Length: 247
Image (cartoon, rainbow, N blue to C red; front, side, top):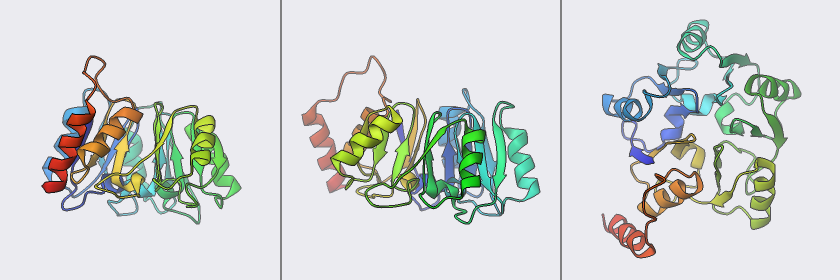
């Protein structure tokens, strides 16, 4: 299911957290409420690790990862690297990469099999992504935006992309990723999907401002609804979205 939460006064969950099928990283410094939302949903299945990267808590935008590995910028300190390595499962490779485009979360979008990357990433970085994350890489853009990690969110079940992505581009992305692709928004109309939410194969976290219609799209494309849950009727969706608009 998709849960709403907030980091201090920010709805940009994807800036302060990184969620995969093998681990969850959460930036230091939030209220205990933010941590508890992640822990209650995830700690039975995967480790929830509190950390910083290069002394910053915007960890979701600085790193890229999946169940196979985690890539960190070269500005990550030795103590931060050691803490993260010690906290993650042994099967997860952790590597630092020297890359001019150091906000790796903005320039890489990946699931456990495929990574979409910024067209100007170094060849060496691309090789490290392939080796560490165990993925095929494709240089592309989303709706004309080179920051693929900011304007798309990908899991092994589906992908959500910038609302102005042409249908032909979505078809192409769907054939590359081998999952359904849909255009949408988060946090009441925000196009910056990577910053607004995190997702893995069984859960998702979005900002408090996310409307019920957006939640419905997210749960639908990422297949997060419980198997025995009744499908939400269109009338119920409209009613919920009206309540959101009036709130």
